Image 1 (cartoon, one colour):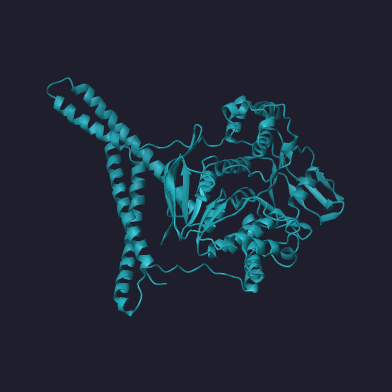
Image 2: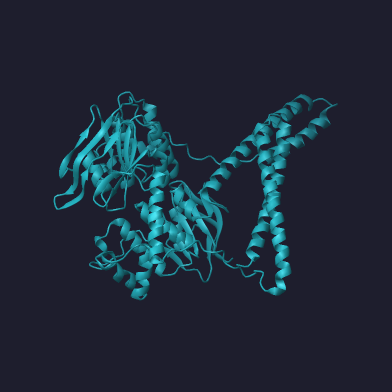
Length: 595
């Protein structure tokens, strides 16, 4: 296990904003690391530093001499009229058969491979860029939000590749489902510090919550004992008979103060509420013999679907199949080619789409827009709470709309929609420009919303949380999937697996790679048996220590007596130390085992 990249005491700031504060982390050649952190924490800045595009204020990035970085480019690298195959050959210098083989891993073939690459959809162009990246054979992939704008099928293809990829990767993503499927380590950037956790993102988040709760309970117990000591000292320090006791208690007090742990304050949790509307029954919208598309191109025809009030309908399908065209036809921004769309009586439709923010009144400020968009009964504090959740705080509220970036305008449009009175929300990619905490808050708000939601999203966690019904746009049709979102994901996975097996490209997860210190040969058979026996004993010990840790933590959470809580805290710390030592030894032995 070699260290490919080491971040040492990195410091980086912009004006008053501290992004990195003595931050350190190590990435090894077997690391599949999910990189998380809130918007603005500094993840993209750190990637640019690693790539050599920016410099640290202090500290250093130590790179292994054999480090080969591969970075997924966000810009358009294609030349006019160039085919995908021509681009791959030009970019990588590899022969056409090799380029075609790697392109095939992402289902880029036939006309897509030989036709003009610029005529492909954004998702397919991303597949081409991924293929180009892999042809350079990097041993550390840097992927910055790779699932943005990728349809489910492309995300799964990328997952399949990463699970079989034998080199290291560092993946920045807000999509926890993608990170859980591809990464077995987690790197967190918060408050300028880097924390590397030897486990997947869900385990890390549980660990963080448990640790914070334990610290809070322990601190409360220490503070209670501290108050008792302070009262004793105040009562007895002036009396000669008890002065020595007061002095002893003062030493105990100083020791207790050293044991208090600081908890870094996270940004406030997003406060998002959807419009309060009366629940309705029956059909919210009906499509009959509907054909959608453009004068020179029909995207889908014979559409006959119905969305009932109170449902949350996810519109799914591969990029380029017509999801956005269908949504635009539903809300009337695109005329049907045939058939009709009928909304139910009393439906007030609110629309969020990526193009909507171009219609904002640039003369207004952020706060003025939100005040005008809000329903009449909305309290001023509700407006401020939602604005803060969407990262419009303090001076940002007085910004004129004309100076806002595209992402800021998109968040502003979504904010105005959520403050309105619509009983039907049509949302096209509402998660773009939102960090994971805000997106989770939006999902929870939509769950509590008593109106109807029709939406698209590339974030699978969001889709799985929100959707109650699934409409698939595919092969010129829009059909009810008749199953939940999980069923749809399973179906797409099965289709991809079948295609990979039929073409002979199916790759099972790679076996663990051998280490330099592996136990090999007949002469080492005895040592190997001893190591395996030790591993078995360690596994039993780890299970026992883990159970003991959970038991002690539960007792600590329930403790009310300060002295007892302090004793239990010390017991938890002792068990955690033993558990860490056992796990470290287990990992060491695993690395020595033969393949």
